[in-house]
Length: 342
Image 1: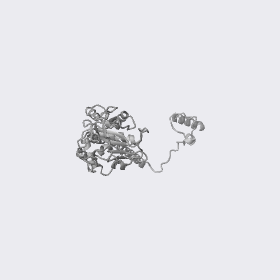
Image 2: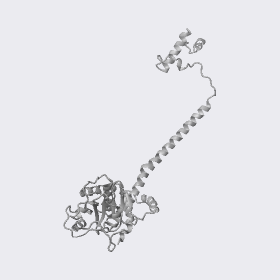
Image 3: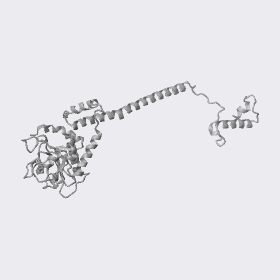
Image 4: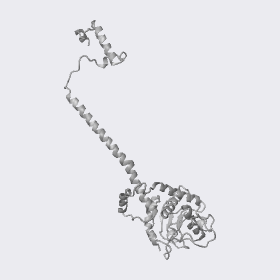
């Protein structure tokens, strides 16, 4: 019986928040291996398939010995690179194992690296992730399968407010019969923790950004057909992220853009005034006004001797008087010979 996990459709948005490349398998919301008791998981169990040719059909329908579904997630390797969300309910993935690990988890203690004897089933306790890979090849931590496994696990832990160092367990840590997954679970748990911390750094509290900032985008979000907010930490964080993004866009871009537009408006007004003044001055000039005859074109100036305009003009006056063999008049008048020389 799925019980409240029928609301797991809301969890899709948390997976998206953590960058999971989700491919839901049709009917996943109602799919489960056992319907006589509620599925109330307390953690996430990581497996690898021990083969590179495991099919989605096997995960869905079983392997001939164990009926399906065999896990909540099946993450296919290259060339497929698909993260299949298979089921919401309990799946047959854990089998018998050391239930003392469950006791440790519930007590806030990380699972022991070496499990005790099998003394109970684990399917009721754990979400299961099947990562495609064999028993001998190391998983590429930068590859699709490992990366998506980290993201799915982090989303589950975020959703349930679980500590990944306590609530994430490898199949080989559940039972002595198994050796999967083929990577260091402590490193995997650390990768999950770091991703959760990174997402948390981008979430803000309502004290830092009033909830009102999220109202408008949230209304749009709901209008698109997404579910309303369930009671979970993940949804609160997502709503706060929407608030943070909206406020940051407003403060960083909208306000500065408005300031820039205002400054440009002032500059345009100044330019319009300047152009108007120039236009009025041009209109005031007499058309075809003659150039005064006493001014020589600059091309006739001796640039080597022209140290400044004043020096040049002084030399010009002296040369003109020398050429006319006239004395510079004391009263400042210009004789006819001077005019002719100019």
